Image 1: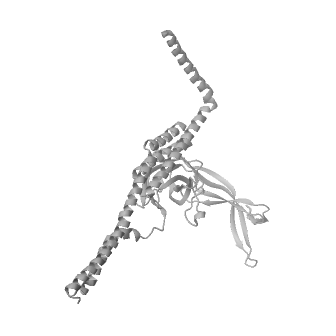
Image 2: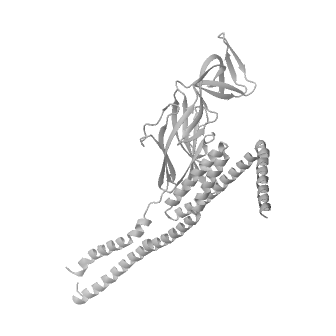
Image 3: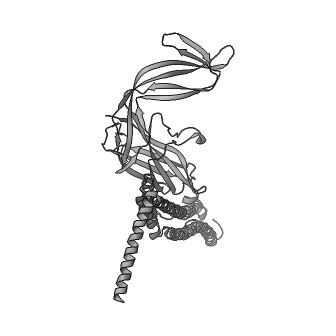
Length: 170
Length: 274
């Protein structure tokens, strides 16, 4: 049993070594590996760009409702800087670095959950804007009308009382 | 003093109190709406002032400037700043004239700086750059230099192009080859860019135009062109090897999901010294 297991492990190791060697022999001269790395890097860049655009739109929507998006913009800037480096590395054929930068960019956006944060800020800002409107616009206009009405009533009552006290002569 | 005499005082007090209570609403309703929406862009020297810009460049030496932008568009904008380098004859961007006529440089970006800027806020980035370029190579040129002039016949009112062609022999043309610019520690390769002390402009002249060719013995021959022909004109650029490091602004358009040239750029004119 133990010998069989050892034999099996040895076979697997040998087989792996043969496969790796074969992939080197077949892949490297034909340029297949480079092509795969290039496609992989391009795919990572496109994915990161898509996520960045999605996050930007969420942040822009939140900002339009009056939310403070400074923290989210900082994250977007960091992600975009990584994406620029990914583009640059891709341009010079360094596909591994390119993929690494693009993945960092994507992770930064996903791990910080920028879209959800932006949506939450948007909801908060919408509520704040609603209450701001109710208090600042509706409240103050209603208050001003109330002051005028109270003033008018007070004027009429004082006029009547003063008229009675002076016997209708003023 | 009877009650009627207090009437005006009472009305004034009530009006003041009503205005005071209504002031939060009035402060929002009586604001003049924004009518101009634009993006600001600036380049400052190393002392963070509009002076002391680098001009004479030494190979490998670091120079600092500050690139800044201000967003007055009314929404959070997604900008892309394309960093480009060109010589005198390569495509330059435009930022004046009718919007439709403003175009970016056709050169590819060496690097893209991305900036997300909230409405009514600014963004600034310190930039340190250095250049790597070759020594000057001198070559002797021999070519047909053309002077193209437009002449209007006063009698007929017709406009005619005259081309005078002269052979120039052994013109010493010095050329400097740009390799790369290192921006904030990142090396960026400058492709296909050399800087000469002479600029070559090719002009296409239509068929039917009269061409006067000056021969080396001093005589001249005039013929009419049978086809559209390209002529070379060479201009001396004086002493120095001039290049432009410039920053073009592009903006993300959510409707088309693409970046559009945002009609503005800033540029540094640099003299590459040896």
